[in-house]
Length: 360
Ligand SMILES: Cc1cc2nc3c(=O)[nH]c(=O)nc-3n(C[C@H](O)[C@H](O)[C@H](O)COP(=O)(O)O)c2cc1C
Ligand SMILES: Nc1ncnc2c1ncn2[C@@H]1O[C@H](COP(=O)(O)OP(=O)(O)O)[C@@H](O)[C@H]1O
Image 1 (tube, rainbow, N blue to C red):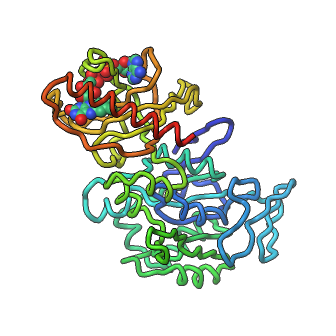
Image 2: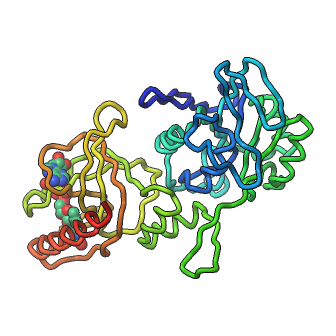
Image 3: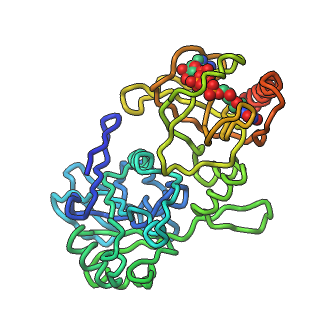
């Protein structure tokens, strides 16, 4: 359990329901990526001051209003005097797929990043339900009664239209609505948010897997569109082979969280934030180029993520960088010499500068 605090705001992260702050207004789901569709599901459980308070889910009542006296009113007219209901995201940890396959799953938003994104939306608490044998064996009825009603003291619930829960994913969003109604808990079912693909008539639901496919194929524009922000790699700068400086392109080598989803290998135009020692306070923003790959030209071992910042010099070792992907430029290649690699990187920089300046 930890309380992650940034800029005076914080998100309470509870590793079990026993440690959660109650009562709660709960958005339920995996929320990997915290993409635009997820925003819609989270929005109904935020207080009016939250950043997503206007324009609720289609066809549903407005979000709860928290008045000056900390009174919470729902659209059903239920007034819970002097009671603060915590805007809570309830998710499964580890990812259910990891539990069923036994394979670690790479995530668009590893835990720290997810917490930061949820905080920026106005979420007050993240509850991690340990996805184990016991939890996966709960029937939909038991899940509602034990987890949502008894342990989390839910006052309101929001889920996406395709939400499934309980043993063998038997419970649907509609089942949740019916079960929760027995306890007088309103459930908002949020329609899947779609976007229009190149085929003008085709409306495609935004999903984590679609974003993963876009990143795997280097379609960064699409990934960023669906996320509602640039896909970002956040890591600490570690030492490399110290060759970059010898060809005039020093590169900050990033150590990323082990479970971070890595996009297609190759070269990218990027924006880079250098984050100060104080957690996540941006001190500078820069433009640059990034390579993800094995560096075959220098017989590199293992995959690396490295970024060269334009018009910047100094020491970045130990610093935390946030690298926002803007566009995929080319696949990684094996060059006959370091000189050829240098010529190509010069070209990459010219192309990236053009792309990035056109973006401003
Ligand atoms: C924009 C850019 C493009 C790169 N493209 C390639 C490439 O196509 N092939 C390759 O082997 N290495 C490529 N690299 C990686 C370089 O080999 C690496 O930066 C260099 O060896 C320095 O590594 P060091 O940081 O460990 O000193 C690229 C690096 C950058 C910054
Ligand atoms: N413009 C720049 N972009 C990236 N890193 C830079 C830049 N200027 C200086 N550096 C520093 O140089 C280091 C990279 O130099 P390099 O020779 O590639 O060494 P390494 O192999 O250890 O990454 C970075 O970690 C950073 O501390």
